[in-house]
Every structure is written in C-alpha cells, then in structure tokens.
Image 1 (cartoon, rainbow, N blue to C red):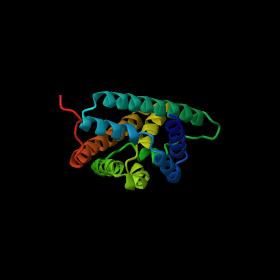
Image 2: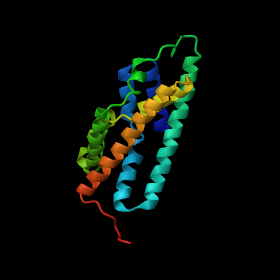
Image 3: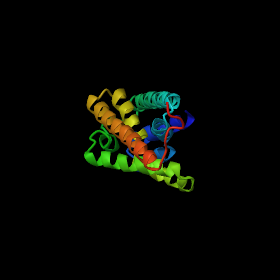
Amino acid sequence: FILIMLSSIIATMGLIIDSTAVIIGAMLVAPLMSPILGISLASVAGEHKVVKKAVIALLQGIAFAILLSILFSLLAYHSPFGVLQDIPDEVLARTQPSPFDLIIALAGGAAAAYALAQPDLSEALPGVAISTALMPPLCTIGIGIAIWNTGIILGSLLLFFTNLFAISFAGILVFIALGFRPLRME
C-alpha cells in the first residue's frame, strides 16, 4: 500500500502538471502488476484461495489509488495556482483508448508473465510496467471524479480495464505455455 500511495501521488501530480517524465516515474513503481499476475498464475495453478486474495488486494489497491488521486486533484483544483482549469494533455491521452492500447497491454502482460517466470529476466519488469500503464489511468479516473468530468472518468475506466484484463489474459496464456498446471487435480 505504501508503493500504491507513492505511485498514485507521483502519477496524479505528473498528470496534473502535464509531465510525461513524472508519469513514467510513477509507472516504474508498478504496484498493481503483482496482484494481476498473481491472479493469472493462481488461475492457471487452480489456487482459488490465492485468486481471491489477489483480487481483494487488487480491488483495495484500485480503491486506494483512486481515493488518493481524488484527494490530491481536489487540493490542486482548489489551489490558488489555477491548476486543472484546463484539462492537461496527459489526462486527455488516457481517455481515448484505441485497439493499439489493447495490443500493447497484451504484449506487456505476456512479457511481464514471462519475465516473472524467468528469474534471470526480472530486470525487464520495469520496462513492462511502463508499457502497460496501470496507475496513470487509475489516477485519471480520480482526476475526472475530482472535477466531475464523465468523459474523463469513462474513458480512463475503459483504458484501465482494457489494460487489466489484457495483462491478466496474456499472463494466463504465457503461464499455460510455460507448463504451469494445478498441483492437484480435484
């Protein structure tokens, strides 16, 4: 939750100040990739209790990130600096997902699962986290709620869920291809 808090603050501030570099910094932390890949691996392994725990952790992380983003967005919006009077380009970029975003998320999810299954490739995970951004769309949802813009909320929800499901699906396929199976057959 500490990583979610820090990543959410960094991503929200990066979106608000329209800074790609700061947003990339938030993506490097990638705190939500673990429960998503946990869901994928536990699904393949038939570990229903682990799937449930990973889903709960993911939902808690999502809620925490959005709440923090709303809080920081409201603070920025009501600050005397005129922040969020105009929608930053980085926010708008996360409100119109395309089929390319789906392809990127599928490839990123496959790369993340493969890197996780290969201990000598763990240094590849930060790059994967950047390609399949999860925190910026979540924080964009928070910004949309803070300024009550349904177009931003719905567009960023679509991008987040596209990334979430594509990463999980690709992870399942990679883990199956690598030979992961349930430990016991019931």
